[in-house]
Image (tube, rainbow, N blue to C red; front, side):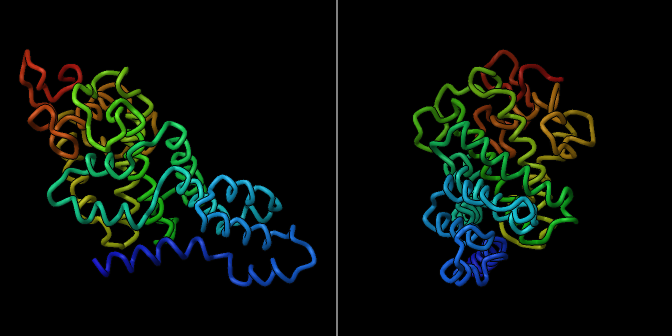
Length: 287
C-alpha cells in the first residue's frame, strides 16, 4: 500500500505542479495580477481549497496561448475531475483494498455516492480534455494516463450514483433497481460505464503503474466473457458512447447485474438465462 500511495501522489501532483514553479513570486511581486502565471497560481489556491468552480473560472481568464498549453489543459482537466468528485488517492485506495472481495461497480458506487448528472458532465469534460492532449495511451505521459484512468473509474461511479441505482444516497445498490430499465438508468449513463471501463483499463495499463492492477485484470476477464457471450471480439474496443449501442448496450446493462464486475443481482454470469424469473442475466433477451 505504501508503494501504491507513492505512485499515486506523484501521478496526481506532477500535472498540477507542472506550471506552478515560481507562480507565488510572480503573483506576489508582479505589478500586474493579470498575467497567466498569476492566474495559474490563483487557480491552484482555489483548487487547494477544493473551490473547483473558481479554479476553473480563473484558468478561463488566462490568455488563449496560456490556456492552450498542454500543462494547463491537464491541470484544468484535474479541476473538472475534482468538481466531478474525484479524490484520486482515496479512490485508488478503495479499489486496491476492496477489489479482492468486492466487485468493481459496487466499489465505485460506494466511493462516488450522492453524485448528480452535473457531476457526470464534469467527469466527461475532464475526460475530453485529457483525450484532447493525447488521443491514445501512447501519446499521453504516465501521469496523464493515471489521471485519466481514475477519471474514468470516477465517471463510472457517478454514472451509477446519479441514476436510480442509489436513490437514497447511501452508497449501496437500492432494492428494486433494474439495470435493464431506461427509467432506472439512462442509455447515456450506461454508455459512460462502457467508455469508462475501456479507457480506464487501457490508460492504467499503459501508464506502467500497478495501481488498481487487479481491477484492470478484472476488466480484461470481463471483456473476454462479454465477447464470448456476444460472439464478437471487439466489445472492449469501444472508446466513445456511439460504440455502445444495440446488443453492446444491452450487454453493458446486463453487466451491472451479473457477477463479473457488477452487483450479482441475477446470481450468475452475463448471459445466464434463468428463463421466466427475475434472475435472467440478460437485458432484455439474449442477443
